[in-house]
Image 1 (tube, one colour):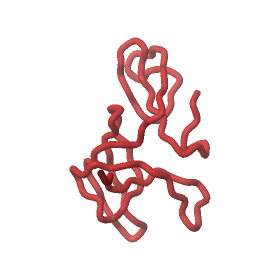
Image 2 (cartoon, rainbow, N blue to C red):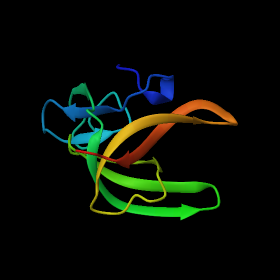
Image 3 (cartoon, rainbow, N blue to C red):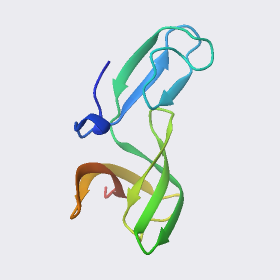
Image 4 (cartoon, helix red, strand yellow):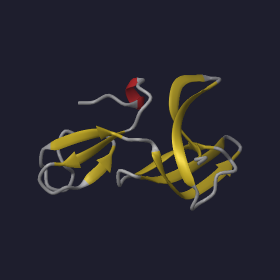
Length: 107
């Protein structure tokens, strides 16, 4: 199985079912819809912001990636729904693990 940010690799891995074509994020050995075989691809890290929220601990965004899956990650507090976004990875001062972080894509 391909490693991703949860293993310390700065990337998101998208899974797809060989049998039914269903796509999802968060690794599984078999398709959650039909139990078919799985292939994986590394996301290009581009998508559109669906929703954002912010609080005392920072902001998070829900993003539809170009590969057809929806993911959650931290984000720039100025990011708004409908804006094209690009994925990076950032570690917090108290957390050495780099987590998904979305910011506005600049053309």
